[in-house]
Length: 206
Image (cartoon, rainbow, N blue to C red; front, side, top):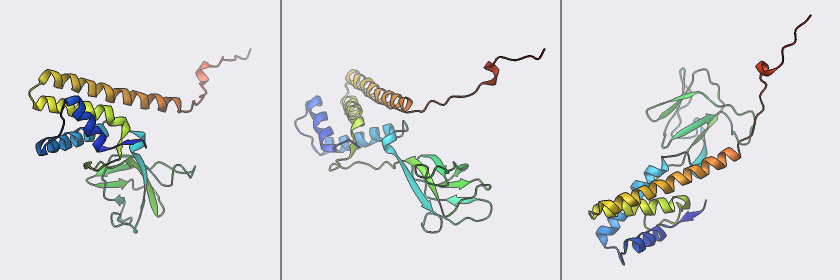
């Protein structure tokens, strides 16, 4: 995944805001604003580059409880869950989507499901706050986060008009990125031909 560093975004912010340096208060503000805005964008959309497939093995992981009673309980849900499979869906063509519900911090599989020693969970990568030495901020967030942090800076400085301009600009950057990803997903989606019996000509016996 193409990435940008925390320092690069900070320099870009400083250049636009006209700040030669950031004092301790400014640094504290910048870090909090950057992580708050990134967290919002992180959960805003099902970003393909932030989606991971994780195998959870029954009995071999401290977060997994072995099957008991009428359900399988899989613990430690730390991010958004998209789908659950009985086998690796990108390797095994016989992989099935499993029915489940979320209760507290657990995935609870339907009592009718039969699984082997593990399940595969398609989920969003967990968000963790970025520190000043970070070099792995997703680049597709760069323009959004720059304008978003600028908006917070202007609003804190009492410049509401400039804050609104940058807030709108940040939203536009994020919307464009979502549209771009959705277009790519549609282009890669296979076309499935279906048979519609209602469209066929009816033949009458005479």
